[in-house]
Structure formats: structure tokens, C-alpha cells
Image (tube, rainbow, N blue to C red; front, top):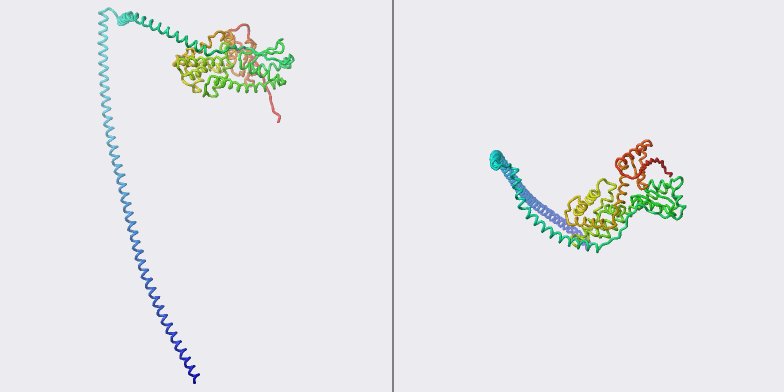
Length: 516
């Protein structure tokens, strides 16, 4: 019974549990559905709100864009209106200007017409005045019995007689005063300058003696059948005199530069010991190149001695070439340095620019360095060189006026002319006969140089022989005889000389190859 009752309770409990679970699940499901509906409803409301907000923002943005576009369009319209107004104003101004120009043209035409009328009236009046003047002159001439020219001459003669005495007295007084002052000042300047500067002078010679280690070297210098000595004389343009003088060879040439190159070439050959035509040419080429550096060194030494700076390198080389030129036997570079020193001293006494005076003094004879290469006087060549290398106008005028060819435009130019005279006029400074001799030899060489096909010319044997080397590709053997005859005839026509001059034309053809 108890068991049955327990079973019954279990069954009832299970039934109640099942029913309760069912009811509980049912209730949960209803609650879930209700919550889902609430969530959906809430989402719909939020979506509607978002939609409304978005539409509102979109409308506001569109309104803002529209307002911006309207404002920009309005600004553009204003700018276009302003530009249009400006263009309109400009067109109006151009119209007014054109109208003004037209009025001005009309006024100018009227003024020109009036000027032409006035000019005609003036010409007519002038013609009437000239007629009246001529009538009066004719009447005066008739009354006085004198012509216009005679009356003028009489009047001028009377005035001249009245004034000449007064002018003469005035000029005499001023002249005496100037002489007294000039003499005193000039003596002070010259004495002061000569006391402060004095230079030894050594006249340039036309020969150079080369010492030999022994007399046997004379034979080697002459070479087989004289080929060595002929080569030396041909390439250097210097005459070699080999006589009975023991252990010495004399080099003779009027050009100091040629003579110096020949001396160094010969001494180098003697030291080397190899004396033959090819070696002679090699040494000569090397010495010629070294001599260019030596010339530049001479120029730099002169500038350093005088304290002159800022000189073009090409001009320094030309200054160095003065060392190998002479003026009446006086070394041109030494003479130029003397003039520079004296000019600087005188300029210092007068309170002028000493550095500029030295520069002008050094360059006053610069044309002599290349006057044998360029046509013209050394003054003209010097002026051209100074202009080419952008020298000061005072220097250029000093070069042009130091021989009185041009008027001096500065005190320094006058100082340079004075210094030049002082340097040249000292006793023993110059030798006129030597200068004439050198000029004659230069003229002799230049006569041949003027002809076509000439490569080199050398005056040797103290001017008794002219050796001419022609270009073998332009002058053949037959033409060489004609060249010699033409040169002879030109020498006879243009030069005066004692004795005779032998013209030797040399034509040489060489074939050279190099083995590699």
C-alpha cells in the first residue's frame, strides 16, 4: 500500500514537474517574443530617426553648397564686372589719347607751317639787311676811298701797333720770371735726381768670344767638308770666325739675341762632345726654348727692381726682349730701367705718382723690343702694345710723346721725356756709328723678308753677305737664282753701303722617316 502510494506521489510529482516546465517554457517564449518585438520596434524607431537626421544633414549640406556656389558666382560676376569696367576705362583713355594725338598732330602741322612762313620772312629780312649793309659799305668805301679789306687792315694795323708794345713788355717780364724760376727748379731736380741715381754703362758689342778647351775643337766645329759650321751658321744666323786666335772662336752678329743663343748652343755642344748637324739642331731648339724662359726672367727682374706690379705676362716677355736690343749701342733694357729710375725720382720731387712714372719710364721704349718684327716706328708699336695690354692713359701718352711726336697731356709724360734725354745724353751712353751699322744690317735682312717664299734671312760677315733660306716647297732650284737676282737688284736700289754684298740663296730638301 505504501509502495503504491509512493509510486502515486512520484507520478503526481513528475506530472506537476512536466506541466510546470511546460508552463515555464511557454512563459519564457512569450517574454522572448515580446522583447524581440520591443528590440525590433526600437531599431525601427532609431532607423527612422537616423534617416531623418541624415536627410536633415544632407539638406543642410546641399544648402551650404548652394550658398557657397551662389557666393562664388557672385564674386566671379563682380570680378568680371570690374575687369569689364577697366577695359571700358582703358578704351576710353585710348580714345582720348588718340584724340589728343590727333589734335597735337594738327597743332604741329600748324606750327610747322607758321615756322616755314617765319623762316621765309626771316630770310627775306636778312636779304634786305644784307642789301642795306652792302649799300652802307659801298657808300662808306665811296666816301673814304678805301675798300672793306683795306679798311680792316688799317684798323688791325693800328690796334696791333698800340698793343704790340704793351704785349712785348708783358711777355718780356713774364719770360724773365719764368726763366729764373725754371732754371732754378730744373737745376734742383736734375742735381737731386743725378745724385740719387747713377748706373754703370757697358756698350753692347757685335761679337762674342767662345773659349775652346783646345785647338783641336776647331776642326770638330768645322766638321767634314765644313758641314758643321755651315749648319751652325744657317740655323742661328750668326757668323763663326775661326782664325789663328788660340783656343777661341768668335761669333759675329748684329742681333744680340741670336748671338747669345749661338753662344749657348756652341758651349753646350763643346761640353757634350757630339758635334754633327742633327745634334746641332737639337741643341739649338732646346736653347731657343730655354732662352724664352730667360727672357721672362729678365722682364721679371726689371719689374722687381723697380717695384712695378700687375703687368700682363705677355708684356713681361716683351720687356725681357729689350735686354737683347740696343739703341745707339746702349742696352735698351738698361736704358729703360734708367729712365724709370730717373722718372720716379723727378716725380717724387714734384709730388707726382712715383709708381706710375716708373711704369711709364720702363715702357717708353717697349716698341723697340719688336720693331724688327712689326711694321712701324717704335713709338707707334709701343702705343699699340700699351693699348693692347690695357695700360694707363698716362703711360700710353708718355710712350707717344717722349720723342715729341705727340703733345704731352700730363706732367708724368713730360718727366719721362726729360728722363729719356738724361739717360741718352750722358757722355759715352750711346754710339751713333754702332747704331747705324745695326740698322743697315736690319734693313739688309728686311729686304729679303719682304719677298714671297722666304723662310729665314741672316746678314753675316759684318753685312758683306746676306744668306737667304727659302721654302723648298714654294721655290725650286731655277727660281732660287731669280730670287737671288731680285734681292741683289733691290739692295742696289734701296741701300747705300761700302764695298760689295754677296747674296746667297739656300734651298734644302729633306726626307725624314721615323722607325718604330
